[in-house]
Length: 132
Image (cartoon, rainbow, N blue to C red; front, side, top):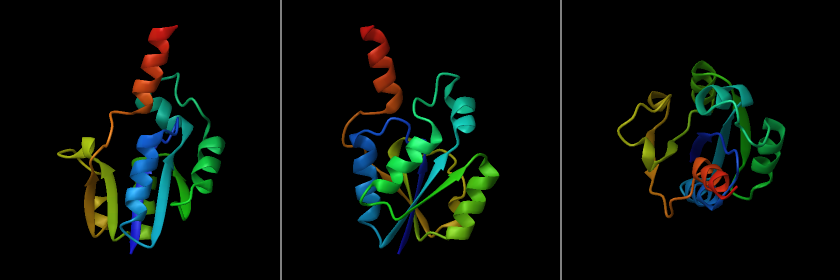
């Protein structure tokens, strides 16, 4: 079964790893699509991403559960990636429950991953700013 996950994966943390290992456990091939730097800036602000695309992509490609990686810069590119990959399952974080999931009509089903902890890149950055 083909599994699909997408996101920024800016500062990799254990929440990301938990999600990726969970997703891989659902099938035989895990494809991860990563937002471009420009897309992250437009959604999360001018101080993001912390790590540029080439670093985020290299890290993602080196992770054990990940079989393939692509990059997208727009909703249309994301939809085209999902259509081409035709996943059996798309895995989204539970924070996406009740929201529009881009490209969900091109996969067999969407599965929501329940966070084990409250870790997020935004929270890590905010916590570090408050210490300084």
